[in-house]
Length: 347
Image 1 (cartoon, rainbow, N blue to C red):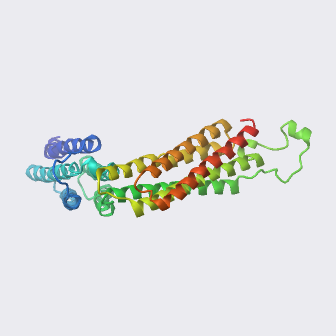
Image 2: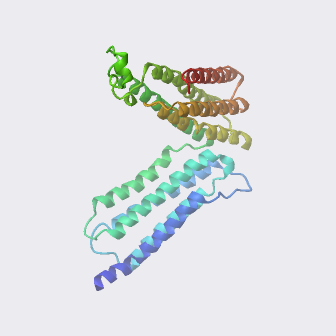
Image 3: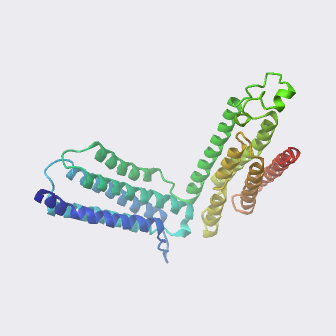
């Protein structure tokens, strides 16, 4: 009993540290940046942030090592390591808040999520230390320590300005839409009418005995509808690829207005992939035609909005006007084709 009480007393600083780290993490997730009144140096920010991330990683290593084997650290040592970790956490969260919104909301969100991930990793490590018997370095503690290292290491790969941040986001959206298209192609290849090569008597078909469960495969009419919808999905991928290229080649950050325009593009484009997914889901057997009609209209609306914002932004050079207009026309054309087919099918 006394041994348990002794352990509890020694580990009290770590329990208090958990609360402190949670407060810092929640503040990072929900807090506002400290807008600077003077000149802000993005390069200096990254230099100091990387130093604070490195320090946090080192403190996590010290914390893990001191609790990796018997004997239990003294109360004084436990207080020292808790204070040291807390200092690194407060420094990391404070430096994050130096990044103003005017440098780009997309960049800020990426840095915010990465910072919160480091703090989540620390909380997991602390939880393992506090809940595990102190005998030896457990596999769970090793994994938790490695999780903090990985979260810290990712800062080296983060985009360093808003143009790079927006480009990274758009590139991820391109991949998601590509995956959705490939899944649809695979489903079309695999989902065949099991009785497609059998001549069925009309009377048997009327009695529902000749075609099996039609909820599990596409009819020829369904496949035609899917093909028309794929045209709109392909226009989604093309729009994202072209927009990514325009941001890469023409994106500027000389003014807050241009930085904000990049954010507007990323914000509008984020709805493309979910809209493509919704359309794809409504196309799987049994085809939900009212849902297909709703989803093609929604996807077309999202694409038109993205193209309009692109057209009015600084990333749209004179040479880019043609592809913006072409894709806008392609969206209209595919939407008309799908709706015409749905109307003829009695949707």
